[in-house]
Image (tube, rainbow, N blue to C red; front, side, top):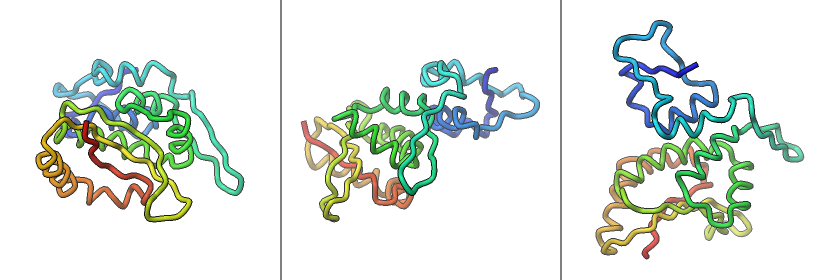
Length: 178
């Protein structure tokens, strides 16, 4: 069954819709209007929706509640980002599943300021907390350092500082010079 959105809902990015659709949170209008668009034709949807929505990976940690993450959401993240030490990144996303929708949203925002850059995800030791780890999204830039830092500052002001609380201290976004 194709997912349909009306023009008001088209303001969401394709990656956000992919995750929301997979998690069953996207609402289809009861009666499609003439302005509706079949989002299953969007490239990110065709990849994400190939897997049945009932295929879910479940992780448990001693003393914690069960958390469910759709395998398709992880596959979509792997198509958008380059994982450094893949097993570590997947393990971190398993432990902190609230980062998946934030990363999907961040991808579109980062592309606004760094359209041709690769974005790497890597788990690193948090320099501010001894023994804690953080997921770092490194935007690989081939720009003049002043221009790259100016773009990063604008990205921070326009979106990241408002979204930072949702990361719960587990995600850092920075530039990496090539």
